[in-house]
Image (cartoon, rainbow over all chains, first blue to last red; front, side, top):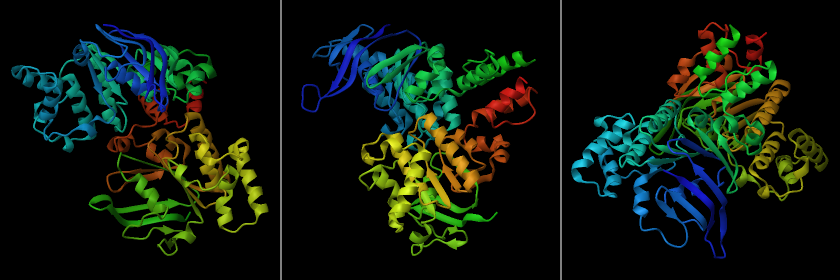
Length: 283
Length: 269
């Protein structure tokens, strides 16, 4: 299922005196069942890209394609509902959007929008909680009394409930403590490997992306300045420094070993694999 | 070493929200202390308490003198504070004037002010922007100007409250190194309150705040040798420490390293 941007531009308040260009001539094609990270400073246009993929707005110029749905021109297509079912969008700090008294009602609300049959509803809710690692005891709990990590999971469950093929996450690790962050990384990996989702992450957390992304796009001032597979992008120290992006710690360490000792070790996703490589090269 | 800041049994709340419950915390003069904490552990409130912007049920002591609303202004001549967003604090028309402002307020002569501002501009690389308007600068330069202004009075204590959040990694590293030098050579006491555990490697002392209270305080090296405290505080260990611990487990090294360069040298001598 293709997600494609074809010369997409987005101008906020287009054709008015307050027109502000946000995205400029963006073209890319995302691969199915992969995790793609969009990184770049705040205000670079990442959230706008997410909103376009989710069909929340039409591009000012160019065409956005999500599966069978094409967004361009002045009018929304007739099959827009297909896109709403295909794409799930988890906003920044999504727990700020809770308003129901129980977790069950919160997830139900998401399903109501898609008029799922009553009989299926309960199973879907239970399944979506299971997918994020929460059991049925959470159904009757007050979302506002949950820990931050649990709240974040419930927010993701509300999106998983209607089983979209594509999940977009906007700054999913923001404000999370260390254990919650690690659980979230595991969950995202599982969504790709076990549930075969296509995942798009907008973030500045390069360490998180290093742990799980396949491809990276660097966005600056509404343009793609660099794109490629994760290793190529994260090894490019000069470009990361130019756009003030943090180099993942594992990469930094591997670079240091290469510079000082001429050894090519590491460049792994995960500290445990890095240790194994070090072990092999030392013993 | 004497304490430059002493906090004894301090309780502080915002309305119904309890922030500190009988907090006990000391900062020794001449140390560079990083303060880490869980989310909502009250780190920013602590900065405001030391800056004299808010007051708890007990006065905080600065060099054994209790800070009260009456003497706060006088004592704060010796304490400089930098916050996350310096924009609203800029008052002057040019960077040069802004940096010199605290000395102007203290009635220093224009010659002395000029000399000190130039020295500070050289230290922080601000020579190119001295004539610009502070509000028009990019965020990094704004924070550098804020730092220059904070250091111009040669304070005894510098407090930084999440001051590096929006800076590039390179700039953050440069500033922290300059501060570490000032701590070592000029004995400037520094308190760096931050969300980023990696920053604790630049300081020589470390405090972790827990829920409403202090969780641990000690030299950076000592605290980092207790990973269980980080786990309890729901914080990640700095990368080099986590890596060291795993390498120790496999008997590849014998101690915890705080310096990546040294670790690499010792692994492949």
